[in-house]
Structures are given as C-alpha cells and as structure tokens.
Image (cartoon, rainbow, N blue to C red):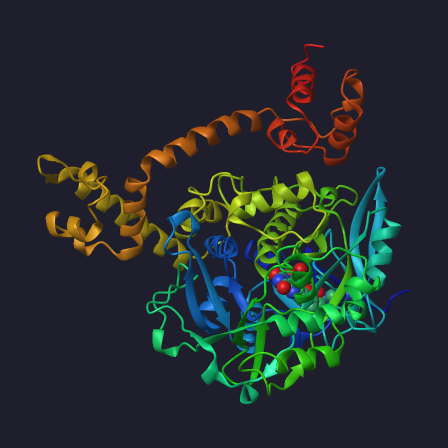
Length: 608
Ligand code: FAD
C-alpha cells in the first residue's frame, strides 16, 4: 500500500515541450493539474538544436501562441537571433526562426509553469501507469512514482519524449539515457506493453558542441539576424535588433567525407548496432555522405547556445561516430582546425507508440483517459511536441468536465494537419512538419495564426483578457482599413480594387487614402494579403467547403466495417485500426480507395 497519495484532475508526465504546454493548457481551462518530471532543472530543455521555429515549425509556434500557449513568448524573451526564413517567397512560405539562449529559454518556461494557477510542478519520476476496469472499459486512474507515492487522476498525459528505454550511442560506446547526462525510463514502456499498446523504436541524433574560444571566426562566413526582428508571440510588441548575436557558416570538404567513409564500419548506424529509423530530413553527417555521395561539401551553421556560455552548437553535423573520428573531423574544417569539443555528438534510440492508436484529440483508443503527446507519438521537434501537448492538455481538461473534444481542422491550423496526419496515417520515420504537408498553405500563414485560432481559443477559455483585448483591437483595425479602402476612390475605382493591381503597394495606398497610414502594421499586412491573394484564397476556401461536406458524414465509433461484405481486406483492416471519425478522415487513410469509401457511405446511409 503506497504511503502518500495526491489527487488531481489531470496528471502530465514529463516537463519537456509537449508536457509544459499540455499542463499549462489544462490548468488554463481550470483543471487541477500536476506536472511530474524527473528533474526540475530540465523543464523545457532543448535536447538538441538551441533554436525554435523554422520552415512550417515557425507557423506551429505562432499557432501555439494564438491558442494562448507558452512557446512564442518564451522565445521572444530569450532569443538571441531572429530571422524570417523564405521571405523572398510568397507569404505562405514565410517562416520565423530564432536562436535561443538555451538556459534562459528553459528558465523562462519553468517560471511560466511555476506562476500558472491550478498547476503544481513537482520533481517525481513516474514508474507505472495505474488503470481500472469499469463496465468492461479500461480507464487510467493515476500513476505511481519513485518513493512510495501515487498520484491519482481520471486523465493522464504521457509526454516522456526520447526517454522510454533509451540508449545513447557514440561509436561502440552505449549508455542508457534519453539525453546526455540523464537516465532512461523503463517502467512506462512496460506499462504500455502490458496495456496492449504497440510500441516501436526510432532513433535521433545530435552534433558535438564546440568551445567558442577555440573557433577561428575570422575565416568563417557571418550570418547575422534580421534588421527588423519579428516576434513569435502576438503579444510581443518589439524586439531589439541590436541585442542579437551572430551565427557563422563553415563547410565540410572532401577530406572530411573521406574520413567518414573510412570509418563507416565504426558508425552505429552502419555497423548494425542501431537498427531503428532516424529522421530523414535531419540526417547524420554519415548519412549525408552516403546518401549524397556526389556532394563534396555540406554547410555547417555555428550557433551559440546562449549569451553566458561558450558552447556552440554545430548544426548540420549530427553524428554517432566514435570520439576520435569526431575530433579529427573538426581539425579538417576551415576555421575549426583548433576547435575543442565540449560535448560529443551521439545518437539515441527510444521507444515510441505508433500514433494511429490515438483519437485526433490525442486520447488513446485502448485506455480511456490516457493521452499521449510529443516525441512519444513518433514525431521529432520541439514545435511538433508543443502543438500536440496543447491539444492533449486542453482535451484532458475538457474530458474531466464532460465536454466534447476540440481539435483544429486541416484548413484551420498546421496543428490540425499534424494530429490528423499522425492519427490517420501514422508514421514510419520520425515525423516533422513541412509546408508541403498542408493542402491549404495559403490559409495557414504564420501572419494570420491569430485570426485562425484566437477566436476559438477565447471560446474554449484558453486565453486571458490581455490577449483578447489585443486581438479585438487588431480586428477593429482590420475592419477600419477595409472600410477606408472601400470608401476611397483611386483613379475613379474603389481603393480595395485599385490595390489589387500588382504594381500598387501599401505605402502608395497610404498616400492616397486618408487615415490608412495610421493602421498598425500587423493589421495592414492582413488587409494587404487578403486583397492581393484574394483569388487563390477563395479557391482554397471552396476546396475547404468540399472537405467539410465529407467531414460532416460522421462515422459512429461503433460502426462495424465487417458488415460491409464487398469491402476489400486491406481497407477493412485499416479502417478498423484507425477508426476514422468521418468520411474525410477515412479518405486520407493510405490504401483506402474511393470505391471503398463509396461502400462505407452506402452503408452509413443505410442503403444496404
Ligand atoms: P522531451 O523534450 O524529451 O521531454 C520529455 C520529458 O519527460 C523530460 O523532461 C524528461 O525528464 C521527462 N520524463 C521522462 N521520463 C519520465 C518519467 N518516468 N517520469 C517523469 N518525467 C519523465 N528534434 C529535432 O527537431 N531535430 C533534431 O535534430 C533533434 N535531435 C535530437 C537529438 C537528441 C539527442 C534528442 C534527445 C532529441 C532530438 N530532437 C530533435 C528531438 C527533440 O528534442 C524532441 O522532439 C522534443 O524535445 C520532444 O519534446 P517532448 O516534450 O516530447 O519530450
């Protein structure tokens, strides 16, 4: 019998990027929430790259912020360099990215969590999941922790990242642990197996960190931040450009590639020591040398890990090669000849749960009340984890008070695309977000995340009065600008029609239309894009309507696919596994054909 027990509405296991957003969202909705994590000094820690955002990931951060989440404000407060990627392309591709002061970021997140009402942050290592059988249904009822105590709750969110049965590899050396300097978690994997979850293995890797004082920056290319850094959070008004630190660019060369090729048999990925799949789009340097054999150079970005540290992250050279090879590699690179490694690169293998075992609101199909979010679902990246965490946390809190789940749709948010892709198609390699995964990219822009989500977040109870007031003021500005343009006459035609002309820009309009110059820039940008891209946006909106018509054909959770005699075996098996909520989701299951869908529809409508 455990000595101590604590009662909550929602328990979140793991205070990484998913766990902190999950706990904060649940608490914002009023649920009495516990965030349990192995080490209070690693809350919100960046395991790998000290950066937030990037292509499609930056959009997710803006969405997390629009929904009242933590990540955007944390990176604005602690960023050391801000860049808007792809800014020469159209607005759908604009993606904010920032280097973080890694420690400052982590402390900022921890402090936000500590201040959040309804939320207790506690240093506890969870050993096991507790369940009970009620009317033939398996329900979660709490967790047991090291030190003879239990935490009881009707909902539990598992966000243990890369820590389940984790093994780190550097050459032949293997150490148990989910991140350098930390341990692993075995009990939870055991519990998942016991409860009938399918559990598989993935791997990821990280590069060495160098000491800045040993780098010859004079021979490297400088990469400064933007002249006008753009914040991630819709609440941040201004970032100081002169506060930014530069990054630098170095290059690998033939000699480095030759060295790697000569030592491939000592690389765990190639010696057979690691069999699991790694992130295709974030390959190790040994992978790059093998897969892109014709390339004789790869770019490396030297990114400072913070303002008060000499550690420099070498983006682009993630590796699990042995120490002696890592030492030699850097000596062959211009500018890094005398570079001193402070931490060696390594790969980590870990357990994850294929996400088709979840409903779109991140609750598991097998155990009522158990939610999974973040890297445990086969994703990679802080932003992907944060987005899932927010959805899981919000829906756990809603479940406690008997409310229906809420999940953004694919045309509403990248987070909607993310959860739908995961639960519908699963993933056979670590999943990261790309703009190409979204069919309605022009609707899902980073600049309009608040217009897409903050109204919904307000109805859900996720945002505070400051954000509401700010958002309403922006909407009022947008309305005012639209009105001014409509009423104005430029060369005898209405201002909004005149602005459609490709050669006309906002500055010109401000000269012609009285009052337009007073519109604040964020609102002006919305009005400009709405007008300039109206045709494309309307086309995407009409496709969205079609999709919604399919989505309105709901499939009951108890629908019996085995009743549909002519349904092909593959379709039956996949539909049974995913259990899509509607015809639109069913359509996206790979291997389910339009003919299969027609059969399902016929049976849904009771024609057979
Ligand atoms: P994490 O951030 O890992 O957080 C998990 C939390 O759970 C930790 O705080 C841990 O202490 C806690 N925890 C674990 N077990 C327990 C327990 N039993 N009880 C209580 N608390 C527990 N992403 C990329 O996008 N690109 C990369 O190149 C990349 N490389 C990576 C390299 C390495 C070596 C690692 C470790 C990760 C890498 N990642 C990379 C992934 C990135 O770190 C994760 O995607 C992200 O951190 C996932 O967030 P999360 O919240 O799911 O898990």
